[in-house]
Image (cartoon, rainbow, N blue to C red; front, side, top):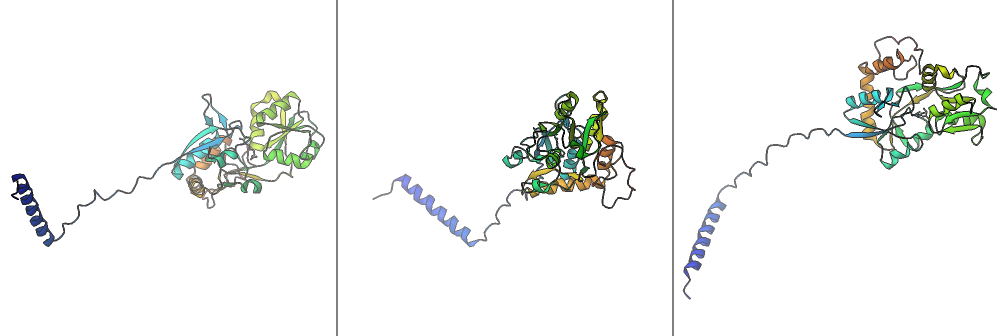
Length: 295
Ligand code: ARG
């Protein structure tokens, strides 16, 4: 059967093509086109971490007029983040339940003057300590209280679930109705003003700051040698080693370059003498004891 002209053209084309293909086979394979330009190393991704802070804890954490979390903790963590290669976004978060936000992923860091305790270490991880603290008793100026044991028969205000709450539980008993628990430390201190409690036990820095800034309340502070030294750390979800490493790296850097000391001076006038945060190999002699916090 004679081929149609179209079929002939197709046959010719196919033949031509196989000749070319055969010819190509004899030649060396052309080098594959270079796959784009060699990939530049990926720019380091700067992660933004969400930070939970109970911003009712001046001078460590408080809210600005425009409701931004500010204070020593915010300044410190921002400086740490800059050196550690990450960014932070603060969210005012109630103290009660604040640690659960790590587990749920709502917060990546809790920066809230959190005392590092063995019990808390079971459920979260902590950065290196960044501040020394101790419990302190606030009473009215005319109070007869001179030591912690004097609180035994009194109504005592604490912030729920704080280390202040824990020490008072040890003295009065966990379920003693004389322990009055408040959702914030300022609320407990206001109740002291109002006469609803006879004493408040809380972190020294906050008690001292409140007394200094509320002279009309006519409070004084009473210390007690039985209070064990505490240290603040930044808390992260248990197992978040990547973030912990960045935080610790940043902490080391701000201690080494003097910005940690500068922040302490900004808030307390001088670096607290007992601050655990003193650089390990500081070239400068320790500052004289600060009259402020962290003694
Ligand atoms: N240091 C104490 C604790 O860890 C009290 C911290 C309270 N912080 C706050 N922002 N309310 O239990």
